[in-house]
Amino acid sequence: MIKSEKLQLAIIALFAAVVLFAKLGQGGLASFDDCYYAEQAKEIINTGDWLTMHYENRPMHENDPVCLWAMAVMFKAFGITEFTARFPSALFGLFTILLVYFLGRLLYGHWTGIFSSVILLTTQIFTKYARHAMLDVTLTFFVILALFFFIKAVKGQESKEKNTGTYLIFFGISAGIAILTKNLLGAFPLITTGLFVLFNKKFTSGFYIRFAAGICLAILIPSLWYFYSYRVSGAAFFKTHFGYIIFDRALKEDAGNQSFRSYATYFIELFRFYEPWIFLALAGFVLILKKWIKEKDKGAILLVTHVVITLCILSLANARKLWYIMPVFPAFAVMGSLFANEYILKTESSKRSTLYSFVSAGLIISVILLFTPVRLDWDRNADIKALAPVVKETVPEGTKVITYKTEEFFALQLPFIFYSGRSTGYPITEKQEMLKLLKGKDRIFALTYLESYKELGDCRLIAKYGELVFFSNKNIAGKTLPLFDPDRPYTVRR
Image (cartoon, rainbow, N blue to C red; front, side, top):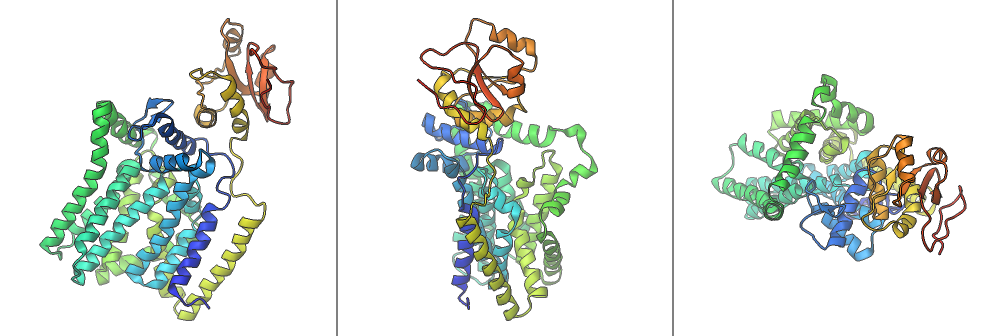
């Protein structure tokens, strides 16, 4: 019988570690965000510059550095691999599952905390992106951590504790790191708590002063990096970091293609991808709303404000991705857990029985994940990974590889840069243009797919894997080009 609260939490932490870390190094990085962020982290190591992010050896001002620093530390310590690229996100995913327990327990007791963790652990959207080399799960941890410390401060004032100021300092630090993780998406704790304080008049003057100090600290932390970046790169930093990312991408992109349905994107996708927990979350939202109206419950007010503000503001942006709203899922987990504990699992025995069922299922799943060949990720970009060593050895640094009739540009370019260290240009689509380059005096290196390669005639095959072909227009001195081999990647021969 698992009666110890600490043991219950430890078991959930163990299952979470299995789900998030098992076979984390399998499969290639996803073509878009994963490879893009991992390449910037790799270039931190290559350039030795930890304060200005780079991409293709040029300063890149789009992204904040916290996640890229974490990846770079892993690369520096353990090498550049898929596992080390994904590790920080998985680690903060584990931390968030544990944190949501403490948040649920702080607000509504141990069992609400336990099942909040269980719900978040079994939220497929959350665990999926916790196994990606992306920013959003790390952002979620620091957003929820900031809200957690704020609630601790509010409850501390109610019980007249002496350390509310310390909690508000930690609130400010957490919010500042959240901003330094993903731009203004990290500022939502400041908006949520600011509205909470504005419409709740029962705080002491000392609380207001300490809260203001926490806000100032949250702004100061990212401002130090902003100031450095401005000193190094000038107005170009702000033009990209805020102008392009927020005003161009978030507000102007696809501005003419918006409809009422598009503004409801997040609500539609929650019903598509947040099953089965969406129904429990909605019931919990209604219950929490009731607690706000009837009981003036401080935790309920904060959770509702956090969810509503996040969903409404991000719904007004033109760029809507499900992972942008990742910070609402811990709040949904607490709401769903509260409803389950009050209306479904009413007795202590039913709570324990449900937990034992989860433990049993967790053991079976853990055995399957750890000791069977079942895959948790598909082999993304296997062809690019296979050809990358050949490309790196044969293509001089600084030389771009031409692409001919390939897929969408970034789907190929981003993983190609990360795995090979070489860049590509936008794909050539006209056969005559490609033939002209092949007949020119300059040596070129190119990528295409098998069908397109065959139509080009006399080319020098260097390597092939799957349908992807790497070739040149001239022989390479000192190397014997391979015979056509459709079945396995080519190892460079001397």
